[in-house]
Image (tube, rainbow over all chains, first blue to last red; front, side):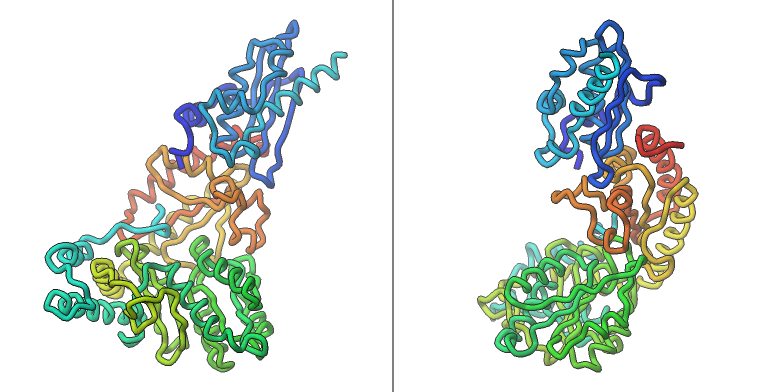
Length: 125
Length: 384
């Protein structure tokens, strides 16, 4: 099974970045469904429109964990507008590709991030 | 820890096979000495295979493995019944947790116009004998129920099923791929008409298997050609593979008692150790299970991640999670025993073999709790 994943995927799976929760987050986004085997939550802390801190929790397969990990790494320190533009394809590309069957079910980090940003924006209108 | 998936070829088996690749390479169908040598050794292998299930040697047909054996047993019987299927003999009974080599064949038969009844199983994976009785109709010509399940290790009440089938004059096929070498099998005592065997699950080579066909049971061949195996399975004999299967059966029979007691001890130790993990559960039956099978589920984590974390620590294991399957569906076996998809995703099969050691069991027992803990720390479903 490991050879269906790139080295980079396995690295993020073995050493996931930014795991955990943020107490008093400015935004939270959860996507997925335990029935499908993938669910992920992203917490953000925002200062001056910049993602100052980001953490995640993921229940799911290797692809789910790795894609959330790398997504948090990419957007940390970015402006909300920049972070909002992150797509599933960007995440997969940064990981050096994902198996095609995993593209739709497990590659949900960008969706979770946008949900977290939406929540922050709603609260801070 | 994945011997249920496959086993290494035993050294004695390999030694027995090697001459038949080079020195004695004859075609068993040839009349010259080389051919006759191959023929003789194939007949010897047939006796060895018959020995492990207490059949006669002329009731053994060599195939390419378990899947082919299941195919020829079920389709072979069904196609013989085809002419009658408009009137009678169009009904097959199987169960929900069969191996795909049986289930997919049954689905195929449904497309051909046969009716297939899929018996449910209880939370342990056992079929109900009453359910079986109720499902039988005057049109039932075949019952196909596996001897022991490949995922959760549950052993079915084969003797009772055989008795019912015999009383109702219905043919009884059982996929015994996982049970051979781990459960004593007597096809006569159990009233089995057809039984599938695979070589690579019992320390023999891959690409070899057999079907036991009780004398008098009529089969339509699937592979036509030179008429080998009494016309039931054409194709030049895979002499080294057959020799390997034969030797593996001989050794399997000889060592069964020792193997079973060794694996059972290790399995029970493993189960005891693993169940000390918080919110861990055993799947399958506490007693009626294969000596080498331990099957668990852990709340709030997913099996593919779990398997690959174990793989990093040098431990090979299987999972029933959807995420590790090509179809992205949770194991049909785990769903059939009543688990929710999210419970099935967190499952792990650890299966032992003849060569497993106590050290290995202890290593897994020490490694697994930390991996479960790490994955749970990362899981939004774990709130402890």
